[in-house]
Length: 399
Image (cartoon, rainbow, N blue to C red; front, side, top):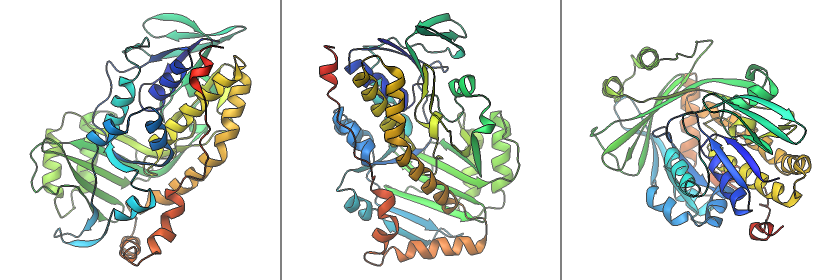
């Protein structure tokens, strides 16, 4: 078993491609976009994802493009501090192995590790999968049918591979009642270096974080109740204007910047829960298999963990892909289900739907200043209760 089709070049896809290549196999990533995606939101990166990046020799690069955020600050209508906490707590809980970086930058760094050693097909997508006795037929929209030993869906929340293999995602996707949106601007004032600012009203939050090159990133999280997800950029901007028209703080200025934006990340907050992550010669990793919601904070790390474990199990199974898929799922399912439960609890903390909820959230955050309380409250969420398997990928190249 040598060839593997990988749908997606976000986080999970390039991670799987690297470790499959390290074991002497031939991965072929397929990406529907014409190039790697840019923009989006920033992520906090620690735990087992950090460990995998370290095994790939990427920590220096990640540190270079990342940020050492000093404070999360919640502000009121006038921009005055209402609550917040310093990130020294996270540094202590993770032993200093903690960094904030744009998700698109992590994706780019992961892709850099495979772009010169694997065939990558951009501007194409998988539109059909046909199981055959000794391979899987992968129908590409523009390039016709190709054959691989196995096919892997690493194509995110709205996975085409999942839909082709398991059916409509409505049966597997649970929406959590929020939409998240993000865009970058340039030259916005004021600037607050290494501080993540959040302003909230019932059912809506807007955040600001300053990136390098004088580029602020704006993040919106807001509650929806049956609203249809707008599909065009103009419709998405119009929805944000409706939701934030009554906002104080910097909302009018942020909406003015939004009008000038040409790119906008915009998606619903959902989680995917599946009975199985594989079927025949097809398996899913990352958000395609078990999206824990963008607000859970560990989606990218979980994607890397799943890709690493699947690559290792495939290598150890020596061509018995059914055994590899079984071992991969058995190893990770309890860990992933715990992350999903935590993600659902955490979603409402960004944009509580009532004034009482906002006040209670701020009180909890203020209490983090009490020594030991924050560790007690979030220490379990920070520390991953999974022993990352050790795979000797170099030895597999000689099998």
